[in-house]
Length: 356
Image (cartoon, rainbow, N blue to C red; front, side, top):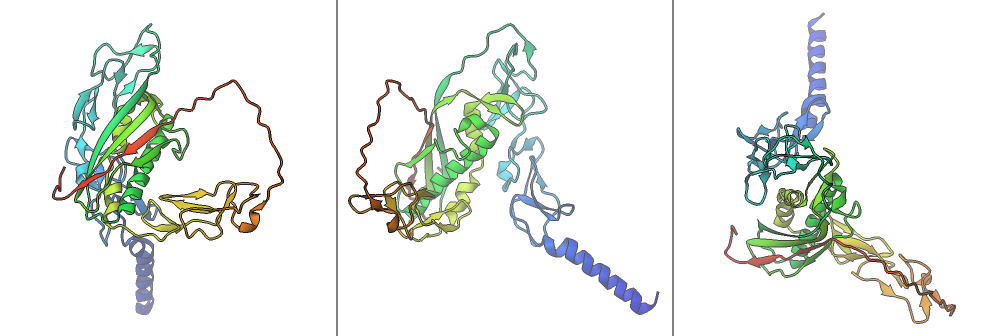
């Protein structure tokens, strides 16, 4: 091989290496690492974290200190590393320590939390790592009302609409993420049966509290991942373990135009014709209303004596004259009872309190 051919060969290999492994791996977001095999950024696995964005990203995340672990993939801070509790115990998100699994629940080396023993099984003592067979009756399904108090730090929050919308969005996002693993948490994938209400908010602050009430929910929820039932309070507390979602989206509040909604990624999105912006969701116009250009946060009512055939009308021409048809609705003696999970978030802001 001649000298010119050798240099050409070396340069070609260098360019291939740069294009395939180096240039494409310029940076990964926090909580991720570069995967040379998949040529993409992957979430840090449980027990690791990545707290900064580097131009030359590592192929591995930082490991938690000894005897600690994380409870989610993609941890972005070292503070996510909590005590790695021994078998028969679980991490208590309320008191930040290890709590014994109560009688009738277990935790072995396969799972991170305490789970209800299968039907026909129980434990002899608290703090058990395995269940034994028993002739006990199946546990009764009980309904609970659970209250959770959260606190987090904010920068200046003069944009009240942003604070309100962001807290609403992120509470629902965290609940939906838990619902993917615990289907009984919500009635649908979008958790439409969960209503989030901001009770009060201030003009500016350095801190905030969120008060969340979950009404009429089962005391145990089925975990699709490990196929066991888990204590509902523990499930809800774990849902709010990842508070950086709320922290990050409150740090730099975008201001959306009228007729736009603020998405979870922090971007503004315009609603479509036939819809109107309702804080953080695009809602369909009701019957007998229309929205040609959703520049407002409401739909326009049809003129008197006109109506639309369906919801989501996008033009005034959809409003047709009423044909005066009289519809007599038959009454029924049956009653339909709807149960809803209600989440109420109260954000209370104040000055001069950085860590509350």
